[in-house]
Picture 1 (cartoon, chains in turn green, orange):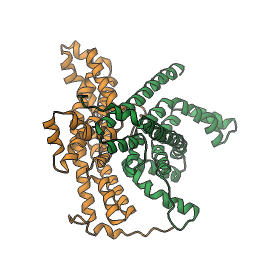
Picture 2 (cartoon, helix red, strand yellow):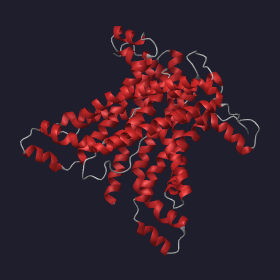
Picture 3 (spheres, rainbow over the protein chains, first blue to last red):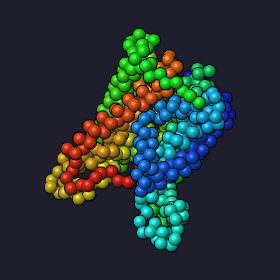
Picture 4 (cartoon, chains in turn orange, blue):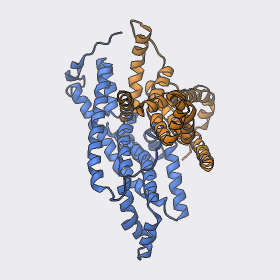
Length: 230
Length: 252
């Protein structure tokens, strides 16, 4: 099965694959995770708001994002972001946004919908008495959220948030459809240049597997530790 | 900043000569559903077996099941798509490989896409099946054994019928995931709904009309699936249980 398998092509392109591709993938994952959790938490607070309009807007956004394929969302933002950028800075023409920033915005906005549902469950898992005692102490909404509810909700949800981040890490490979040079994109370019598709794609699969599986083992260990403390 | 909408594009003829752009997209939806349904049937079959096997006391079977799940859960879908499309035909015996590669379009993309989505989804089904079985009180299995059933019979008559009814809601969302995930097949050349929206955008330069139309079609499809499944769920709900599926899960 491995007869005629050219390991050399992998070795030759390792630098390119990791320094260009993997760096792109990891930076994108980190930025989208940070942005997604922040935006997702805000969405969760909106969804739980007693103001009907606010919760309806957040609910509509989350449901919309969760009903359409990520590939379509990537296309949407790839074409939409230049227009939005132009609208924000008041330019007459759509502005140029590179594949990287387009991807960062896409994944932040998309994953926020999923992080929102996790944070909503997290916030709802905090006993009501916690919020009331905050109010009784004279804290306002933002203070009781920021000092009492969110820290606990966040902590309870860390394993799920991290699992979602592993999924995000895998999903970033879909930037292939806008020809970005992430880890998969870099491998695809080498594969097509040297006509070594079998070698490159099995190698890519192996790397993704090792990274995702190790991370999921870490999450599992973390989960056990948190479970004991609770 | 102004975008000039031109909705009439939907009733204009597409360059392939098969009809209007709207028809072109609807045929895309047909391919999306054909891919998703075929993958779903296989995924249910494999997922049910793998999920069940992982709850049995047979150690090596459990390990084998775990291995299967971990492999296909930790490789991104698009990479799996490339493996099925580019790599598998090369690793098979030459005659079969050549036969696969020479399949006329769209079957050359359709078959690998279905296989890929089926295996990818079967892992998630297996997780749900296992969770469903584990959510049953242990007494159910014990009572089955005590009343003279064999292990296999206990599964067949006591455990699985309840488990499947319990996990119907999470399976619904998995089914919607297959529909959405089938869009990844555009990377191996299957012209399903998203792929056709992209093609329409390239032919007609009406970017946002094309993607809005595709989005609306996806939303309507989701709505129909949700309504159908809700009707099914209310028919098969296990009396006495409030709802199934535990806490929040990561996923999409």
